[in-house]
Length: 105
Image (cartoon, rainbow, N blue to C red; front, side, top):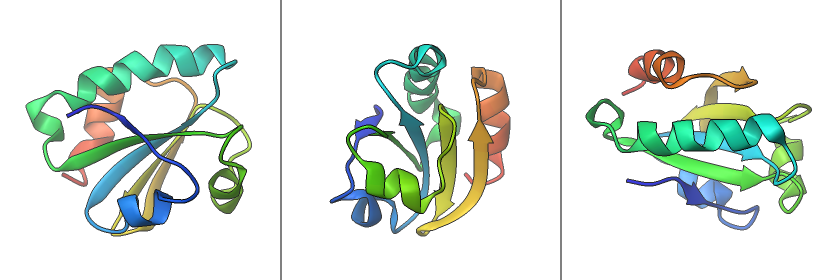
């Protein structure tokens, strides 16, 4: 499974059921460019089965970013059935993220 880009118009629908991790990022953000391949790799692992991986460009989707109070990027938000259950700001390696996601898988 890969990381799927979503927008203001389909964010709620995509994240309303199950567990999801959403990467709030921007094209100009250096740490975001480092975080992206980590999420790509993690989304392919067996330990991440059942978790949906999404990314939202904060420059193009200001409403969703505002709704979550995103002030710094990258910010990763873990949701369960549409409700935010964890928020992670700044670059994190694959092991750190896998440990966090284990709580929700």
